[in-house]
Amino acid sequence: MEPKNKSKIKTCKNLRFLTEVLSELKLTPETYGEYTSNPHSEAVQLRQNLTRDDMKVTRAYTILKNLGYNLEIKLTKKEEEIKNYTMSFTRKEDNTKSKSTELKNKNIAFLEEFMIKNNIGKTELARDIQVSPGAVFNWFKNDNISISYLYKIKEAYNIELEYIITPLEK
Image 1 (cartoon, rainbow, N blue to C red):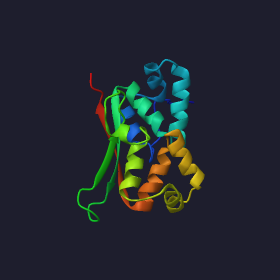
Image 2 (cartoon, rainbow, N blue to C red; image 1 turned 45 degrees about the horizontal axis):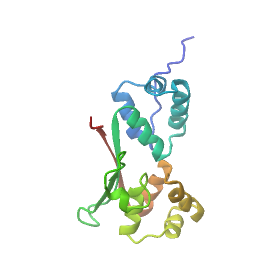
Image 3 (cartoon, rainbow, N blue to C red; image 1 turned 180 degrees about the vertical axis):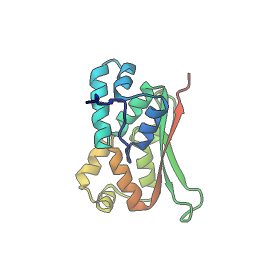
């Protein structure tokens, strides 16, 4: 009997952007753990995230930062509906003045900006993606959202969801 190959990463839908980075860097959850201060715990948690095909956006930011990358999430109106209407946000780690200082949330500012520009309230968003209003209020209170909900928003509003990963500036 052959031993289980721990190097295989499950094909994910929601976390495809992350599995592509891990594959490109030839990393597994176990070898990713070596980039952190708590290797075993981080490896176990990443494997669970990949198995569930979901994680909070702050976790995705942290994983990619540990690997030396920035993550930018974009919500973009489909071109046939409106000309080049793009909203994006890159989380800033420094204290320089940026869009994040104008908005209440830094981790989910892209979502907050989308809602403001489209005049969508939290209750309306909750109804449109079939979650409780309390869930949406908690996303903003905690400044965090599960990536799977971004896909529900994408479907409900017929928009594009894009992840842009770039090396950290040195």
